[in-house]
Length: 196
Image (cartoon, rainbow, N blue to C red; front, top):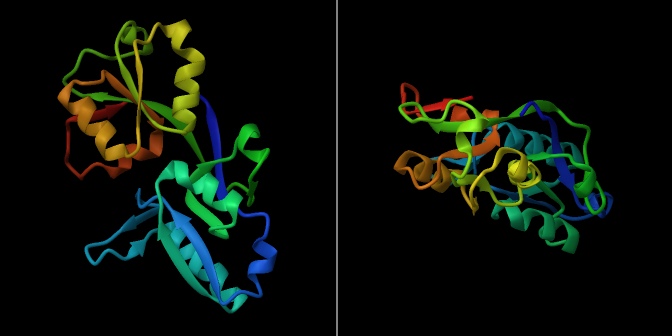
């Protein structure tokens, strides 16, 4: 499952016109640390938040970051509701058909997130078992493309990683197919999870 991913900022086609606007409108999926998340004061923080703030500053504009679900980001850039989207979005050929991206700025592999005390050690252990994915993600695309080869049971889509990981922990799905970086979201010292 070594699928190399490149991520970049998804830009609306009209970003150049945003230079004349007062505010740079940015959409974000806020459950995506360390890239973007909300702190205790419900303010956006993270690497990509700092990046868009710097972009706006260089443009001489304010920045307004909107809390959107991951799936909504693509429609919002396409419709012009936002000028750009952040959320460690993987650049794919399919997405390039209707979205513009910056140059990729980090690599991540797909991983299998399972319970550390569970019975799943390899993809072969998932035969007939339900697996979970973040809806509209590259993990979902990979799971669908490989379901027959590995014999996965139903593929269940989630709108938030937290819900997905809770269902893995509760045994409602046998594994989460996700970007490897996601395992960094777990609390330090939490030994319930392992990425394979």
